[in-house]
Amino acid sequence: MITRKICRNFLKMWMKSAYLKLGDYQKAVVDCEWALKCDEKCTKAYFHMGKAHLALKNYSVARECYQKISEINPRLQAQAKDYLNQVNLWEKADLQEKEAHRSLDAGKNTAVAVRNLLETLCKPDQTPLFYAGGIEILAEMMKDCTEQTLFRTHNGFSLISENAVLRRCLSTAGKDAVEEMVCVSVLRLWQAVCAGNEENQRLLLETPDLGRLLPSLLAARALTVRQQSLALLLQLAQTDHGRGLIISHLDLTRFLEALVSFLDFSDKEANSAMGLLTDLALEERFQVWFQANLPGALLVLTGVLKRDPIITNPSALCRCIALMGNLSAEAAIRRQMSASEEFWEACLGLMARCEEDVDLFREILYTLLGLVMNLCLQSPILYEVWASEVSKRCIFLLNSQDGGILTRAAGVLSRTLSSSRKIVEEALRAGVVKKMIKFLKAGGQTASRYAIKTLAVCTNSSHEAREEVMRLDKKFGILMTLLRSEDEVVVGNAALCLGNCMEVPCAAPSLLKTDVVQVLLRHAGGDAQKTAVQLNAGIALGKLCTAEPRFAAQLRELHGLEILSSTVKHIAD
Figure 1 (spheres, rainbow, N blue to C red):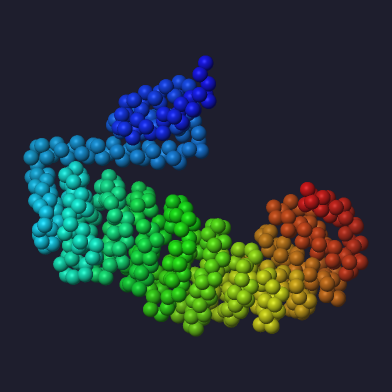
Figure 2 (figure 1 turned 90 degrees about the horizontal axis):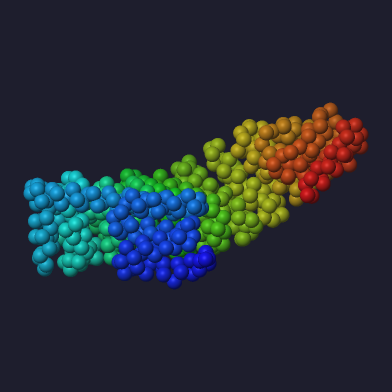
């Protein structure tokens, strides 16, 4: 009996696309069928058989092979979906070509005209103006799928890529008026032949050297060349298919450089470029590329942060910084961003420039604070000196009248203060406790989260901070309100802050007429998802009872010691 191991060895020997590479698809199918007799769940066999049937234009059978992969192994569902999409595209292209040839055989005027013009443009060594004029006429002929398909089947793409005159004009990217005219004509033609035509899009992006050429055209000296290059890429990026082709075939580092250069352009062009970049960045393949090529990509983004906000398009700059913030949400990317001294310095430099006129640069500063908040999630923050500088700038921003700026500045502070005692002392001298109490009185869930965490950090390391909290919240009414919150983060930090304040003499008796024991005991013995809630509530109860024996009596009456013992055991487990 043939074992599964023998079959798999057979697959390793014969199924590394040997017959597929030779173009003998029938034999490839036979081998796959034999392998499946050995192991009916061999996904690799189904993959190769699907590929062979696709080459043989047996589209329905190819689909069955790829669907089988998904059924056998659900983890390969995404790959199977990609293969099925490929089958659909090939079948669609095949149907397009059959219809185009029928139009040509029937002598349809536009079909014949496209073929004849392509033949005329194949003449070598003509003047650039000859080609530019012909290409413009050809672009005008691309009215529907038939003309687009005839362009493809009559070597339209190689007509441009293999023409020495056209290659020279494209490589110089419009250094003079004639070359600029040729470049613009070619770009408009590509837009015309690729509009809604996935197969043409694929062939265009797979054209040799286009991966480097398109980013170069996007950064060309001639404005019209840049505009038409951007228009082409925006058109391609409208679909998942097009975005995948861009990511797979373009030199993405040069592409990124070219896109951010649009930050100095008008609102429409700058925002279109940043919108394109944002759409691509949402693709998993882009994120994989970004992480693998982070040193080069990070250098480009650092350059963005170093731009002068006065002469940079503000809305587009905000979109680019927001993109950095979204990328930094990924731990591996954030770790590398946080490790870059130059990136941190660029962030601080832009903060400093924006603080010169907070009202003018409000949107930029707001977005930048979001990025900095994400960077501060990296624990510990690698460079204490930067944590200190960020804290100083955020303390300054706490004087702003803008609620969004205030909230995000408090958010950054809540993450930087724990970096060192020195930073806490600087914040205390700047009146941070009073500002956070003011935040808590005003309410607001997000602001309250940041404010109470900041107070928890300050009171954890400073007796001065504990005394000031007690002075500003004499009967701990604010902290008691926070302990009744539905937000576990707020409750955990409020319990920690209250427990810290119990170390101030005469603090505990001010709570005698409250239900603080019941509230803390409920949290300590509760089933909160965050164990910090139970732990901090238990610690606060212990400090409360130590500072004021009457609370210990209340705790015993409520059987609190047994509850706390059970909670401690649960947390330890």
